[in-house]
Image 1 (cartoon, rainbow, N blue to C red):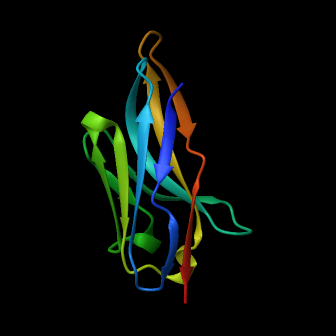
Image 2 (cartoon, rainbow, N blue to C red):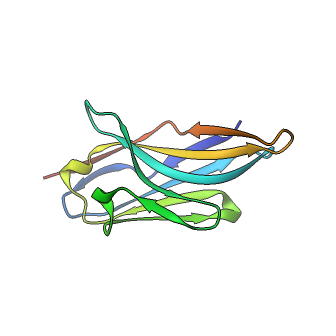
Amino acid sequence: QVQLVESGGGLVQAGGSLRLSCAASGSTFRVNEMGWYRRAPGKQRDLVATIDSGGSTNYADSVKGRFTISRDSAKNTVYLQMNSLRPEDTAVYYCNAIAVRLLTMTRFNFWGQGTQVTVSS
């Protein structure tokens, strides 16, 4: 198993900033792509941003220019810097990791428990 431990959520006013962190652990796996998804109340879980092992990133259109995803591969940790936050960014944010079990080279998809981000107007 790969365990994902998230931190950094909270309450912030519109225009403010927050930084989310997610640390992955699991010695028998190699973590490839990591990312963040979010689920707003009453909506489905949507992509926010992803970053692969080579550092290539992908962003949802709604967060481009405001959010930045980064990764410390040595620590298997992914970060999401969120600036210029808007009330519509309010959601539970989930960390995601796509990892390969080294013994079998089987691909798995893991999720964190989620962290609440609330942006007040």
